[in-house]
Image 1 (spheres, rainbow, N blue to C red):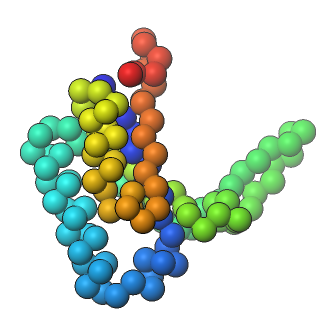
Image 2: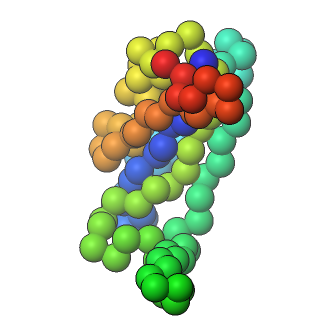
Length: 119
């Protein structure tokens, strides 16, 4: 079953971290990625740029604003797609991700055309 793991963090906090702390976080990410690659559970993933535009169409008129959600300090920073046995395993992977310890990880089943949301 495929699950999307959404990574949330606060770019300002990361920017203010000491270099050794950042290096430790990235080393943890590298270790998890190597494990998921070895196990065959990693489908893919990417980091996302901080720049974003939010588009809302009301009464047929698009309104475009810079940035994700202006009031939020936490931002969607990236994602992983994993293919694992069940949601419990996906949650286990998300719980090991460094951002989960400081901010949040969201786990969502991926919808499939023939079966809807996998669980």
